[in-house]
Image 1: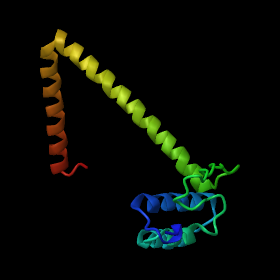
Image 2: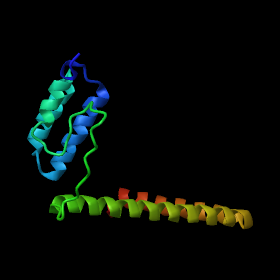
Image 3: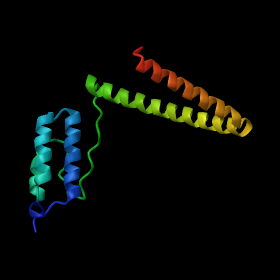
Length: 145
C-alpha cells in the first residue's frame, strides 16, 4: 500500500501540529492560518492529508518517514519583542516560584524548631493573629476601608 493512503495515527497528527507551532514561532505562518491547519490536521485521516499541511514549509519533513532527519531548531537572531517579553516573564516567574519555595521551606523548618523549644509561643502568635483579624473585620464593618 502506498504511504499516502495509509491511515495516520494520533501521534502523527500531534507531530504535524508541533511542526506547525514551530512554523508560527519562526514567522512562517500567521495565527489564523495556523488555526486552520491545526483544524485540518485534527480531521486528517491519511498521511497525504497531513503532508499537504506541511508541503509549503521548508525544513519540515512530513510525518511517517523513519529515515527523515528531525529538523534542527534554528533560533532567530532577534526574537520579536512579544516573544522576548514572554520568555523573560516566564524565566522571571519561575525564579519567583523557586524563591518562594525556598522561603516557605525555611519558614517551615524554623517553625518546627521554634515549636520544639517554645510551644507556648505558637499560642501567643495565634492569639495575636486572631486579634488582628477581628480588628480588620470591625474596621470593615465600621466602613473604615
